[in-house]
Image (tube, rainbow, N blue to C red; front, side):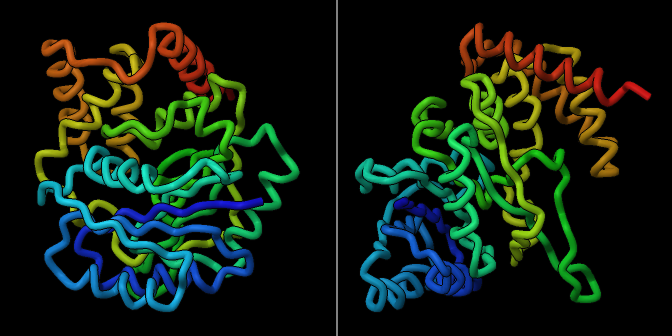
Length: 284
């Protein structure tokens, strides 16, 4: 099996070296790695160059975009630009953040998963972050069958079936929903402990607070599922204002009649799947 890795990077001088070191120390190396230097103003390009000089399978792509770090659109736009440099001679493809450290067996494990289970479309481990005492603890706000966007791997058939990654907030939810729509399953491995060097959301722009609700509208959740999902999110984050922001974002998107990310048929499947999961969790 061959696999490719794409790493979007915007001002990641402080962390990128550790990420690339963990990639080059894998027990099963990638065939190609594209690091997309997305409008960085620090030493990100120099860090990438240090690795491209030593490892011929690592390439640098310099692109220019805005400075705002809005979740979803910016990072996936960079990913898709990196994707244009690659051929389709791969078996699985990885979207990797520039501030994570992988265990050495990360990709060997995923290789075995995809090789032995063609029904698995998306796979990955679990993110851990340092607490105030310096201990690496699990940080996984979603259900345990969800792979965080920082470390997602896709089988080629699944990646093609879902039409690649959407340049929008919610891309790392809609990809899994569409994978299930096309008959694929999601695989997570708790033994693959990935260190996230920068806590989630530290670089996000304040304009992003309404985007979660907007994403729910664009995924055709409907009002009631969006409300339940927003309440759950606010409870998990212990931030009541998150519910208000989400619903405001949803209603604003509805009033503006923004475009959907999924077709009516896909939206119907997503709503039915969401309702099944909600009812399952309500059972005693």
